[in-house]
Image (cartoon, rainbow, N blue to C red; front, side):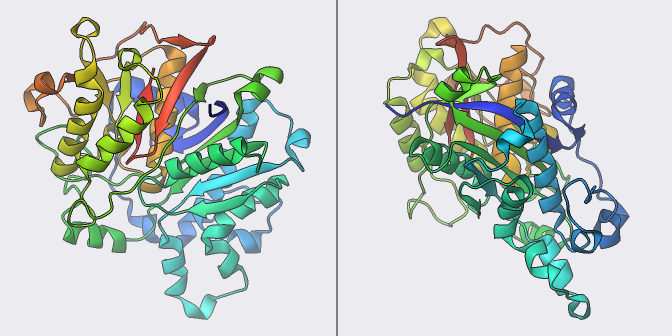
Length: 403
């Protein structure tokens, strides 16, 4: 049996404010924190004074050519280590791996637009590999360190890779997650021409008003170690990752951007064939981007494999999507949903889905045996497992299952 992996630290920065308390406030309030892009967003100088480079031992000259995504990753990695309560001197020199989901290269594009200002810091300031390596360098971590680009599933594929690495002994602990910053408009243009992005700038999961996804930005990092070691070290345990899996659509659908119901069902069946009982699943954090095609495919897949297999006594399966709160944070989207689920487990509360109502539903919730929360639900009795809370992560678009 695969060894269980414990989440022992979290750091994040999402729309609504930095840190877990602010993120939880956003979720509990049931609000969408998308705002108009400020005029100064695409002026590079606006980013230079928001990072304490001295704290991380980085010169001002180098910091001025660092992708803001690297800065966010350092900040959130520090917060995750701080949240874990593990002393920095104990982390230093340890076989801790770093696995980072990263897909957007806006800052590199901006720098390339000004070739006369190129310095020797351009390479390290924009390289995807350095986004992970700089964390290892700053905190003196000696485990594997690399960035992963699998588009919107990047941060969960990073989590999957980190869990695999810990289980096979590549590292003792791992920092993993994802980041995404919006710094210039070219990606908006491409997404608009593909008719994938919402003209209103918001993601409205499972809603008839859904007209594409709204782009969001942010960063999330979790610190992982084996459950056995976490218990030995008396760590605070946020949740347990007991199973991860990854697959690809192949050529089951066309075009390449369309989700495959066949492959979604295949992965769900592979996970749940391991003995996890359908009746114990209380909530699924879905990908839920707010696209008419994607939402319906995902809801149908979840229904066929999980929701319809449940007894009528336990009621419909609850599903939701953090994208209704903070938008689609792309390469950070999976870890945003993961942190949301961990916070709901901590507070034993199901948070509402923004924009959604039964009257405006784009899916037949009764036929699918699912329910999308529209109000805060406190006092949820989350099923315990070995004295802790069990979390199953499926790296498929970003399906997260809370038991």
